[in-house]
Every structure is written in C-alpha cells, then in structure tokens.
Image 1 (cartoon, rainbow, N blue to C red):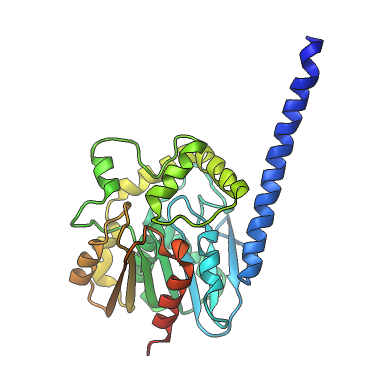
Image 2: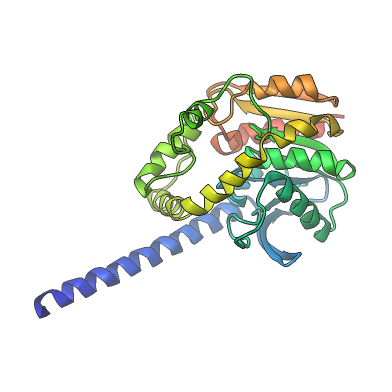
Length: 307
C-alpha cells in the first residue's frame, strides 16, 4: 500500500490544482473580455433573489439584453464591445442561470422570468429602455414588451423562442422522435457537438475556456433539464401575446438555425400589429450576437438610430 500512496496523493493534488487553475484561468479570461468591452460586474437583491449583471455605462440609450437557455450575461459581452460609446448596456443573469440565485422549487417559465425582469429593471430605476433577447431570452423579452409596454422603447429579437414555427426545426424533429434534447450535453466531450449544433462557425474559445464550459454544461445538465421541462410545458406563450406588443420591433435570425426555424418570422409578420423589421442572416446559427457580434451590434446600432 505504501508503494501507491504517494502517486495517489500526487494525482489528487494535481487534480485539485488543475481544477483551481482552470477556474482561475476562466475568471481571468472572462474578466479580460468584460474589461475589453467596458463592462462592470454588479449585483442587486430583488425580492429576495440575488441578481448578478454586467453594465456598460452610457448616457444616451439604455439597452437591456436577455440571454438564452443555459446561457448567461456573458453571451452579450463581445456584442457590447462593438456598440458605440453612449449606449448603456445592462446584461443580467436570469435567476436559475449564471451567477444569480438558483432556488429550487421556483417557477422558471418565460412568463415568470419576464415578471422577475420587470422587478429587476424597477430596482435599477429604469423607466424606458430598449430590450433585446436571444432564444429563451427573446421569448422573455417579447413577453416583457407585451405585459409592460410603457417601459419598452423598442424590441430586438434574436432567434426568439415562444412562437411555433410553420417549418419544424432540426431540434423539433429530434424532440418529436422522443430523443434527448440536443441542448443538453451527455458528457464534457459532448460539448463540441452542442457548439456545432448551435453555430455555423463556433466562436473561438481557448482550450482552457472550452474545457471549463464543457464541464460546467455537463454539471448543470439535470438542473437545465428541469427548467427546459417547465418551458416546454408553458408552450408557445409569446405567440398568444404578439398582438399586445406595441413597441417597434426588429427580428434578426440565423438562416441555418437548427434550434428554432426562421419561419417563426412569418408568424410574427402575420400576427404583430406594430412596426416590424426582419433580417435573415445567411450562414448563421442560433445566436448571431455570439457568432458574429460585430455584425449583430451594427444591426442593433442602425436600428436604434432610426427615427
């Protein structure tokens, strides 16, 4: 036994050092990304829940951005970098995700999150602002615009959830076959498959960051699966609220989106009564603001500058 004790102890120590090093490198890398985007990390307590968020200071327009399922505030970090100075950007971690509180037994449907987001914006003293969301975050942003029209100057949707597409997406076809959701990784090694499913050209990630996110995605699998179950049970709630949206709206969609088919835009054109502009991006996947943050920011900037 003595013969193996030292190598075993060394292995355990090396594992702890690797995990600690990976965590440190991750925090350093994310901090650098936020610094380059002029983002400050902040927190606020709202109705007993701690929210973490990043903020880019600005005195012109305010833009609240809402991440998608399994995501967090840093889905908007590189996007924020390409917006001009003067635009104030606020990117929260929704409860249940990122660094915000994740109490069990809470309702994590898109409608419930839209109501929480309202109280979050009230706590920050935000009166009127633009709101953008991707995927689940787009569904939340749309519901927010429908329920709280006096707060929303304009609505910006990136491949939003909450509306049934006339043409099923690849993910819907997989779901109809009763197979596990492609949004849930089965192992850390499965992370590359998730990236390929979500993006046409996955964003560059240093190996230590990719490993960190892969392990984090796998560790959160059961938790994310429980939230996904609630969202699916909620159904296409945003579609029921489309006629109530008053804010002018721009919809930006990746044509190669495998998660939600771009024909959702046809439903939006048919049912929404407000000013609506749509942009279909060739060779783009489910999250344009991550896949091409510079182009996405330019589209949003041009939209905000319109009279």
